[in-house]
Amino acid sequence: MNGAEAVMLEIQTHLRARAGESAIIGPDTNITRDLGLDSLAIMDFIFDLEDSFDISIPMERIAEVQTLADLAKAIEVLQKEAA
Amino acid sequence: MSSIFDKFAPLQEQHASLTALGRSPADIEFQEIISPTEATLNGKRTILMGTNNYLGLTFDDEAVEAAIESLRTEGTGTTGSRIANGSYDGHKELEKELAEFYGMRSAILFSTGYQANLGAIAALAGRDDYLLIDADSHASIYDACRLSDAQVIRFRHNDPQNLARKLERLEGTSGSKLIVVESIYSMLGDMAPLKEFIEIKKKYGAYLLIDEAHSLGVMGEKGRGLCEQTGLEDDVDFITGTFSKSIGTVGGFLVSNLPGLDIVRFVSRPYMFTASPPPSVVASARKTLSKIAGATDLRKKLWDNAGQLYNGLKAAGFELGPTLSPIVAIRLSDSEKAIALWNGLLDAGIYTNLALPPATPFGWYLLRSSISAAHTPEQIALAVDVCSTIGRELGLIAVSNRKNAEEMQVNGAKTLNGASEKRPFSTSEPESAVPTRAGAPVARA
Ligand SMILES: Cc1ncc(COP(=O)(O)O)c(C=O)c1O
Image (cartoon, rainbow over all chains, first blue to last red; front, side, top):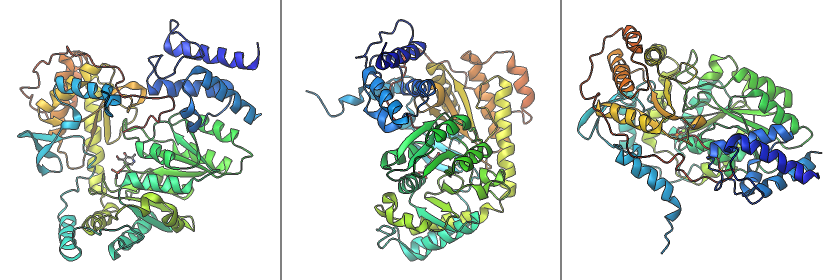
């Protein structure tokens, strides 16, 4: 498993905890449209990810994210910047 | 054909469903303002329990007279910005008086509290800087972040550890770090753990700005707010505030003891590109501000009143915010019952604020009231009583809490007829009707 896959797997684990086991979760899943999560739930989900990856995700970065693939990519970039 | 308004369909739906259940908060209009605590709503005399008028000074004779005098001598408006023709003696004097009141070097006056946050935060934190804001921040703070060129990092609400972790990750970066918190949070009335935040700010060499919107006049021996009450004024770098609550008019400010604050006047767009407050507003703000330090009796009355409402509702079995403060919020998870309670109170002649997700923490539905020193014990007793009656009918609180609540009612309110009118709960309410996008600021109202 490469880094990108590991990031996606971790995202999916956190997302299932919030959106439910039955939520259809893939790279193209649109975070605001497809998961039935409101902006508060999404904020908490982002906090989970920050703890889990030990990074801070600035709001401007989140604003550019639409799909889970976008999110995974943003996290990878932030991890590299932090390293 | 598509319309530019199509994207607001979910919001329209929410508004329509609220209207169908009784009224929409956005449609409330008062006709006659009888006093700081009473107005007529569609002809009905209504007790105002959600106006932020903490000290009840909106009809203060001297403040009213000062405004009238100013209107006659200085006119109805300045018709210009602070950096052009909009600075009068009154504006400068008010700034001096604000600085003196806080015992700080300088103060800058803005046209509203919203603009003070926007103007202060966006000016102070520029490119290469970092803004660290509490997740439950007021909309004006979120909007300031959008206006600022700084990187914006949110920390969990009132969570010093989460803030510390985020500052730690920024170690080695060169930009300034500005932490932004509020004294009393406007939705639940909970307060920032200032001491812990200050320890962290010192450890990481960050700056701290606190919005004292809801604590000016309300907390501290002299009414300077949470910083005064906790004895931490020397450790706070910037304070913002508003005249729209305890001061009873409109306007906002930034104060600081740091030398060089005045440069903000040259870089802050919400300061430069809007008209300055009308001289009459400045005149009444000055008059009222001059009374804040000495308003000890009003503050005591305010907290007694807050205690009566908070403890009365708690004894009745309602779930409230975590701490006693002049903002008393009933937390509800059922939208229809929350709306029914809000409507029932209005039918009984009691106005509170209905706050809906996502403008509320944890997706709660909040019936928010802000208490005033001008409320009478009878008004508060009545509110607790009506709330409890409707709450029991709706199954929000247990019937067994009745005795408990009645014992709390030292002033023995009469039961209001009409409060028991049953409301239909048939219209379904969309869960989160406000459109969101990933990363959309979740600003509290
Ligand atoms: C915490 C907080 N900050 C700022 C403001 C804005 O104040 P103003 O009404 O003066 O724009 C408010 C009030 O809405 C507030 O609750």
